[in-house]
Image 1: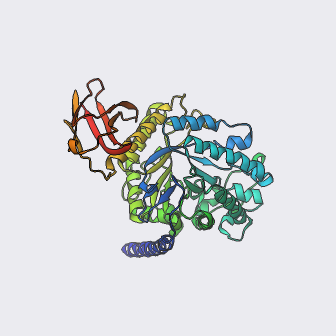
Image 2: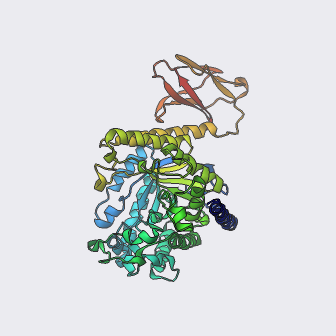
Image 3: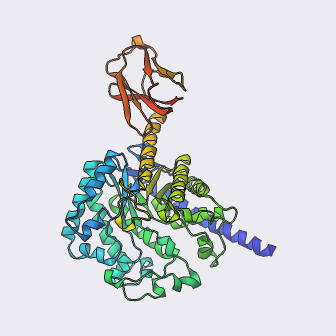
Length: 499
């Protein structure tokens, strides 16, 4: 038995070494590409940090799955405008959405009338631009849609000469070349959770994609419709090559689900043994091609305590291990979906959602998206709207985004000769803002702004002397943020604790 364990450890080390070598080679090649000139887009630094406008970025958006799909189904349906307005008004910065629906039927508009398809999508993108909403389009949301549309089996995703890949290249080329100059496009996602269908070994016949002939699928499936990690990773690499021909710098995402607890063993050793946390890292590297520069996971409460062989991970520990892996691999982590379905019960759903959100905030995950905003098909399970009982989830991410924005101001080093301080802190009734070297400074247009944790501006006043008393007794005990502004530039941000 000991001999078997030694052989096993040796094989794991060999696989990890090979994956590490490939990752470093591809990363080195990608590092030669120059940075994008389109303001506001999302890029990834060489050490795996999401960047916007030259600065590290942190934000939580929403999955607005059918924002455009509903327009494909009914070309007069432009209800996404109201959704964009709500998100913009509440400073929810971006959406992840399906660019062409779920089943082959939704792709037929593009296939048969590209002029109309792109006219509708042009309007959608322009609307996002006008509201300042970032877009992460998932181009091939459903694993089976393209193969079904072109009359091939799903395994043809792994064949670079297939009709499936040819369609992918054409569609991706047209999408990326058309919208690469739009500031609304934050990044490009390949598809949704292809890894969830991979490597079922002798059980593959029981996990074939479902059939829905009314929406364009074939009447039956065969084992040629089963998929493997090699199949979808090959497709993702072809996708990335195509994207980078037109848009070399924007972030690219796999769209992967949170990996199954034994998927590394299923892929490498062809058995169902549970993976360790170390193997989880290796699996993330493998299923998110190095050329992407990102990792994507979709953690949900049903994953809790199902991973890993060395310890049973809570939701917080799942996020911790994912962040650890992203740092080790130098890939930026995108939590492309998270949430808690109402089927858990309202109380449990609220607690599990908060557990996930706290883990995202505490572990400084840069990019995450709540599942799912304004999706009526999932009303009563996952749908979150400004008017239903799950609105508290929107309120929570609005609050988190406000904290991110203000914290970014605190952490940013401003090159300015103005030195200032706030005391006492914590305080109960009054804080005093002191500006050093007052007599030597040009104090024209110097002011302060006071914000609450939701980012709501509470007070703004001009600074007229070295010492300014600011009354805070009227505010509830909480954390507040004070920005000091000089000549329309942010000089300093203070975090104030109100007792």
